[in-house]
Each structure stands twice: as C-alpha cells, then as structure tokens.
View (cartoon, rainbow, N blue to C red):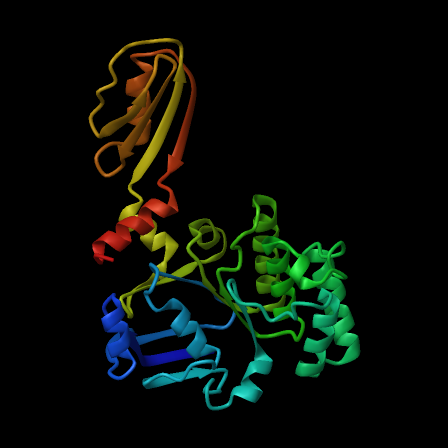
Amino acid sequence: MISVEHLSKSFQVAKRSAGLLQAAKALFVREHTTVRALNDVSFTIQPGEIVGYIGPNGAGKSTTIKIMSGILVPDSGKCSIMGYTPWENRVRYVRHIGVVFGQRTQLWWDVPVIDSFELLRDIYKVPHQEYKSNVELLIETLDLQAIIGTPVRQLSLGQRMRCEIAASLLHNPSILFLDEPTIGLDAVSKIAVRRFIQTINKEKGVTIILTTHDMQDIEALADRILLIGKGSLLYDGSLQTLRSRFGSNKTVTIDCEPNEEPLHIPGATLLSRSPERAVLSVDTSVARVSDVIADIAARVELLDVAVESQPIEDMIVQLYKEYRL
C-alpha cells in the first residue's frame, strides 16, 4: 500500500549573527545553511498496519509525513501510496487519506464544530447518508455531544484534538496520518482516543502511521516502529524485537515485614531500600527472577511481590543512545 524509496529533502535556512550591524548587513547579503531533513529514507507499510514513526525533535518525522500527504515535494526519491504519487496526484489522492497534525487545525476557528464538519463534507463530496452515519458514530465514540455546537476557538486543546480526529475520518479514509494526536489530552481522553484508533484499525482496516513522543501511545497501538534520526532511517522492526534487545531487565518490588537485612543478590541491582520495601533491577541474562525472589524470601518475610518489565521509554532511550541521537 505504501512504498517509500530513497526519499531526500533539504531546506535552506537563513542565518545571521546577533547585533544591529549584522541585521543591517542581512538586508543586502543573506547567508544560508543547508539542513538535510531526510537522507535516503526507504520503507514499506502494508494495508491495515499501525506503525509508530518515532525519533527526537528535528529528526525528519513531520517532513516525511508532509511528503506522504502531498504537502511537500522531495528533492529526490519515490513515494507510491495506493498507486498515487502524493504531490503529483494530490486532488485524487487526498480523498483516500486523513491527516491530523497536533499543532495545526483543519477546523474553522470561529464557527461551531458541526459547521466545520459540514464544510468538510462538501469539500470531500461525501454522500449525505454516509456522512450522517459517520458523524453519528464519531460523535458517540469520541464523546463530542456536549461540544459539537461550540465554536472551535472556545474548545480546550484536548477537546479540539478529539474533533480534529473526527474531522479527519468523515470521508472514510483508507490511511490515517497522526502527528502527535494525543497532545494535550488528559488520561481519560488519551485512553478513549487509543481505543478508537484500535477500533477503526480492526473494524475498518484503516492503515495508521503514528508520530508521537508519547511512548505509551506507541506501546498501546503500534506493533512496528520506524526510528528516524538526523534524517536517516535507523531502525525498522517490531516492539517485541526491541524488547528482546533492550528489555532484559525486570524491576522487582517487594513489600516485607520491617527488616534491615542487606540485600546484595547476584544479578540484581538494588534501586531503593527502606525497612518495609525494596526495589531491585534484575538482569535476566544473568539471573532468573524466580531465583532472586527465592533468595530475598530466605532473608526477609515477604508480604507482596511485583515484577514489571522495563518501561518502553527506557528502551527507546537506549535505542537513541545506540545511534547517538
């Protein structure tokens, strides 16, 4: 469905030194530096996949999404999506995609949300019955009943983001580009949006490309991640593979009867200790968690034990460090 081959994109950025003299000089002579946003990026995405597209700020994520949605033209390379080249067949192509940019809006600022939906229906030429059915489903699923008649300017950021997601799906797109879709959302709204994304992926087979810095979004939604850094694609693989590479550590938390017994256990690092609680990091390549717990139980009277996998954020940080991002 999506094939990206050797995409490259550079931008010319004006620069000048501080000071009044330099500002006057810049009126006549401009100095520029070339920023390479994308450098020979290639990947493919199959129909129905949810792919997390991650990387640090300035890595090239948004540039890639803008090229794939037809907003930008690359310097070189090919991009074929559903048989279309996005920047060449834009009018026909955009009927098949939905785009949500967390920092941009496609809703009209001064009119009620439902009026923006009506305008988008006309733009995409959505049949009336299909539009009505879609709106009812989106309003119910994203809990928009109380705000559908409110002007966009009066909405909170979280409310607006839910409306943005609904607006991007009014025309039943086959592909959905989500750039920071949960930015500004509270915990309840984040969970609702994640469930909605999972639902449209499973029930309608919508292919989703998710760009976010919230690793909980990635862990909850994506089966595969693409890591981009300094304009180059550095990693393409599953979360499970990532866990096997960096997720060998487990965190063991024990609650016990008050005890000052030292807990120096081979293969485990003591992270914190109080008379009633101890938290240890266990390297499972060196020691088994069950052996560590048995060793602890021989020294103190256990009340409760919790074992947790390494957080996804920690694994991503290790991946960034590996590639020196």
